[in-house]
Length: 242
Image (cartoon, rainbow, N blue to C red):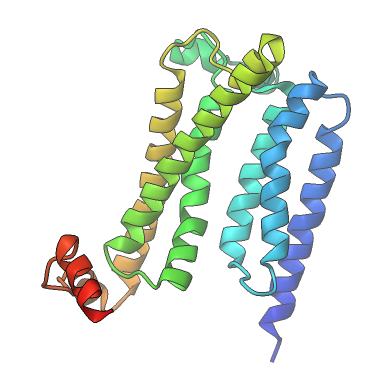
């Protein structure tokens, strides 16, 4: 019988090789080298974490593929700087229509797509971490990944704000990427949340259709496991036990 680990290893090798090509290719002559470097700090940090945890905690091929797709989209944004990605011009050349004109858009919306993609593509890997480490089940297997996606989206907006304050000038504005929209951060977080909702909705639908004990697991996840209050009551009990 064919060893599935070979297919797993081959998948990771292909994804890693393809991303290396994309990273190097889009790293050549970006529109703004300082912006490209800033945009890739978190990418490098993520790759280090994935490499460091590969043997002890390998993710599924689905999770690695979703992360790969997001990183490729991000590298496109990093190459051009997000507000200058020529998606509208490319669509006009290739398909003969302008998405911005069709949808009545007045700004470059590539950053909006990426924030939605973050929620859509990262919620599932986050769910896998919760299921395998925290052993969450039922309702919490969908709610907690959604919450983490929302909170990390908020943290990223704070990072953008901090970078804009520290670096200032054109570099800070290019990294912040508001394009004059005072509600930019709010809309970015809302889109990430929407993407995560779609992702968790898909996972929910698949499990509802295939998991035999879905209803029982869901009900058990909402059952009260600790009937006595915590807080000051728990502190008092711990003091008594000393």
